[in-house]
Image (cartoon, rainbow, N blue to C red; front, top):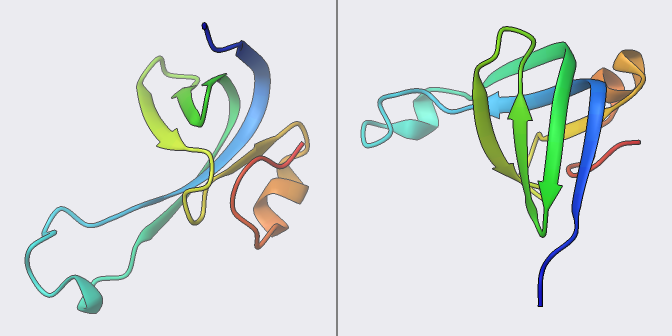
Length: 86
């Protein structure tokens, strides 16, 4: 059984990036929030592949804390929930 693939173009994406020093006192280093516009998000199953406007890509699980995407950048920036914001 194949999973459906959904593609969303020209959307805003919000995510958290954890500091590189993962094994060092992680609690003392808060995650770094990011927000980008004009991205492409491809969703397959529970994983989203995000392509930024500069061409770089990364993957996030849809229910990852701090991850959201949607057409309206202001709504995506303001949302406190995790997951898809459309």
